[in-house]
Structures are given as C-alpha cells and as structure tokens.
Length: 113
Image (cartoon, rainbow, N blue to C red):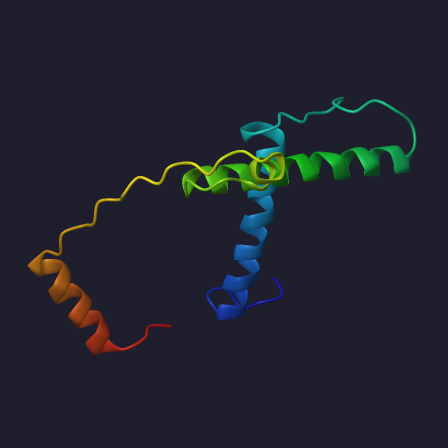
C-alpha cells in the first residue's frame, strides 16, 4: 500500500477507488448491462470508440437522473424546447429541541478532522 492505513491520504485514495468501482457497477449491472461479448468487432480503435459512446450514454443518464431528482428540466429538454416542470413546494423539517442542542454542541466543539 502506498499510504498508511487510516491517514487522510489513504482515505482520499480509497474514496477515489470507491468512485470508479461505482462507475463500473453502473456500467455492468445497475444501469447499462454491459457484459463480456456486448461489443463485437475487431481492433482497439473500434472498442475504444464504443466504450467512449457507452460512457457518454451513462453520463447522460446520470445527468437526467440528477435533473429529475431536483425537479428541473434537463439539458435535452431545454434543447428541445420543453416547458419547465412545475415546482412543488418542499416541506421544511421542524426543528426539535434535541436537534438544536446537537447542532449547538457540534458548533461548540469546532471542526472535526
């Protein structure tokens, strides 16, 4: 291991690895279903181009999901001239005394790591 376990450098490296593993999981199982034999052809150029298009498609799906969660129009909808979705007012959480005390104790302690 290049970094000592538990240090901030190790943690940053670990989070980078977890991020790329989630992209691979989206490609293989969660979103697109890419598997061995999914692409057919000969040559490194063809496979590189097909993999690039696949990653672009995954990125478009992720952007669409992001816009849907935030109830805004995604870039394709804006390009096609679709109307903006109606915004629903979100309910605010009520502040409880225990949550207020917890926030105050965190502020008094100062920043963590």
